[in-house]
Length: 484
Image 1 (cartoon, rainbow, N blue to C red):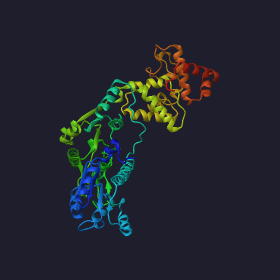
Image 2: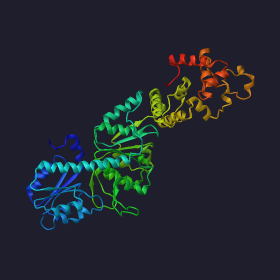
Image 3: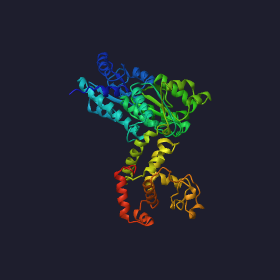
Image 4: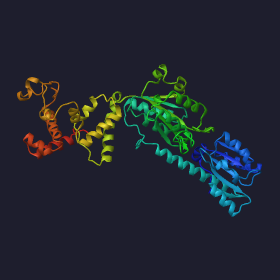
C-alpha cells in the first residue's frame, strides 16, 4: 500500500518546509524530487556548516540529516537541537550505524533513524509520521484557542437578506483573498467567518482571536509567537496563531481595535506571507487566509487617522455586510424555534408553550443587541420560567400587582377600583379582537402570572382545572400556542 498522501494531505503538507543534508549529490537529488510532491519548499546542503547558513535565513519544519558528513557530523550539529524558537523534526540516516550511535541520535531528540541503503517508501513513511505528528499538535493547539462554543456554522433564516448573505459566503469561499465582514455587534460575524472557512475546503484549523480583548503589548506575541527570553515573562517558546492557522483561516475579530503599530506588522504579513516571531531573526513562511470583522465603519476610522488606509484596502478585497436583525425579522420564525430547542436540550428542560402574544412581542421589538440579544432573552426566559411578553412587562417596571387585571381598550370601561392604579389606555386588547380572543388572552395571562400553575389560575377564574385543560388542548390543536 502506497504511503503517498492523497490531494487533501498534500495541501496540508504544503505548509511545511524541509531541509535535506547529505554529502552525496545523488541522494540529495532523489530525496528532493520525492519530497517536492508533498512540500512547497525543499532545500538541500552538503555539510552541517552549509545547512546552518540556510537555517540562519529560513525556517525548516523537518530536517533529513546524514550522520557521516565532512567536517562536523550530524550528531555534532548542536544548533539544530537547541533551537531557541522551534525545534524541527529530525530524521537521521547513515550507512555506518552502531547501537551507540543510534542511542545518541535518539537522545538528541531524533524522530526516526534510517539505515542506508533504504527503500524510498521507507523514508517517505517516516516523513509522513513526522508531518502527521506536527499537524496533530497544531490542531490541538488551535482548539485550545477556540474559546467560543461552536455547534454549527449553518446560517439560520430564510429572509431575503439572509439568503443574499449565504450566497456571498459560497461565492467568496473558494478564494484565498482576505475578507472584511462589517456589521453591528451580535449579528453573527464569527458565524459568517466560520461558514467561509468550512466552505473553502481549506484543511487547516479555524482560529479566532478578538483583537480588542488582548492587551496591545501582548497582541504581537499572540499572533506571531515569541522565543524564550524575548521579553520579561517569556519563559518558553510560543508558536503564534498565524502558524497555528497554517493551511487554515485566521479570524481577526474587532480589527478596528488593533493598535496602529500592529496594523503595520499585519500589512507586512499579508503582503509577504511571512512572519517573524518576537525575539527571532528568522522569517517563517505561512499559508493563512485572513478574515477580519468589525462593528465600526473602517472608512470613518481611516478618515480619523485611527486605521491605516493601505491595510483597509488590503483587507477589503472581498466585503460582506451583515444586516441587523431588525432588518430581517422574517428570520425570527426560524431563529426562535432553533434557539428554543437547542437551549432546552442544553438546559435539560421541557419545551415551553409560548402564546401568540409572546411571538408578536418579539416581532414588534427592534433588537438593538441583534441575534446575541435574542438568544440571551430566550435563555433567560427559559431559566426564569417566564414567557417573553411577561418578562418584558416586568422589565419595563410593570409590577405583579398591576398584572392582576387585564385592561380594556377604553378607559371609561375600566373597573372603577382599578382606574386609580393604572390609567394607561394604550395597554389592553384591540377593539377588533373577538370575545374568544379576549378569553384566551386573559386565561393565558393568568396562567403566566401564576408561573404555569393552572390550578391557581382556575381558582382565580372561578372554573374547574379541567375546563382550562380542555381549552388549552383546543388552542394547541388549532396552532394558537406559539412555539412548541
